[in-house]
Length: 52
Length: 449
Image (tube, rainbow over all chains, first blue to last red; front, side):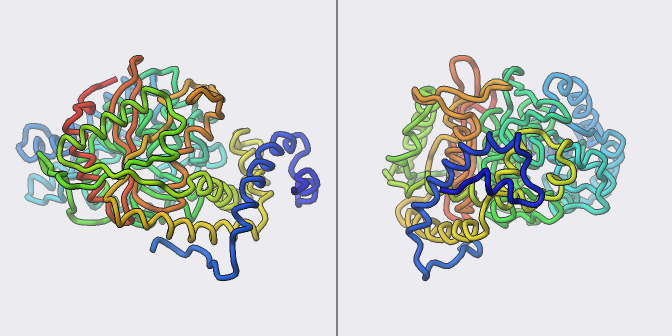
């Protein structure tokens, strides 16, 4: 899982430290839900380019 | 009066556009201190415009059903020479030098702009609890939110100030206020109404559309917003015989307020009584679509407002700044992968349209929460208000399909309940047809706050 504190500190400018804590649970939950979906992608899966 | 009733009265010379506009401005003065739906009121411009529309009608120039009808723009639609705040202190003095396409189209159709409506800051939230211009209040219970982000538009229509207003919908921002305020909201197919000149939030998720008192009013205003001259407006005694309504057997009815579930199922029974056929459908993974939608919006909204966040952070509300911070943490490759997943899910979902013409779901899992409420009980579980309220919404923005929200009942405490109807891309006529049939049958639309 991503180390959000380190990532937030590495941004230019960094996300203010006092604001990072409240982001952590949300970002952890989003990443936990997204990674399994992402793992299903194959190289043939193109991006969406508009309503078909 | 509805738009169509006003239009008939104007042509019968029973009332003038100036009189309608003065009545509307009086309603703003009466109602706005209670609900805070407007940020800017353009009284002098509106009266001048109404007089011009009256003069045209008297000379035989008729622009169609919106000719001389008062309306409001959500305050992120660019209006030349009129302040457009986006609900933010960042833009509190911003005056565009051009009109948005949707403003041009409504002007061509003869609409009379009376003002700009309050919203959730940057349209990035569902409460319309605006830290800079004050909270919008729900006309049915002023201790409750009207929903958002188009909360001022929803509240203004529900309070009877204007018969329609513009809205934008990136994760439910037309349909949520429609549900909480007991009015009609149409989120058309992605791209059908031009977004040029409308402050963006998420480029691949933003939709423009009307919030109106009735389905037929939504139809008329939708066609005008898209620049069409004419278009389908459901007739009286609209026929829905044989229409195939999909009723999800998974997800949409899993976690709901009991009164919401009961009202939506009653609407289903109403449709069957008028000859529609119910088809059970299993919808693809909506939670996955919601995750993809959140990933896309976090990245896109931060792309839109990155400079505002970095340079004007103190002027942005804490809830919106937090979301924009989250967007800074999204990897570019994750955003691209979300767009790749989107394509797969759209193709999967589109298979449903071979077996049904539309799908019925609740719009929101609950009626309007209280202002300041951050969690609520839904189906016996404690949920975050924002995530719960967008749970049945966000996936539809990812899919880009049209969706209509109409009132289908009220709770015992008198709060409106919304029915969401979905259809295939560009099948707005189907939504309007079935929506009008339900509206006529229930009579819910006649109830006022």
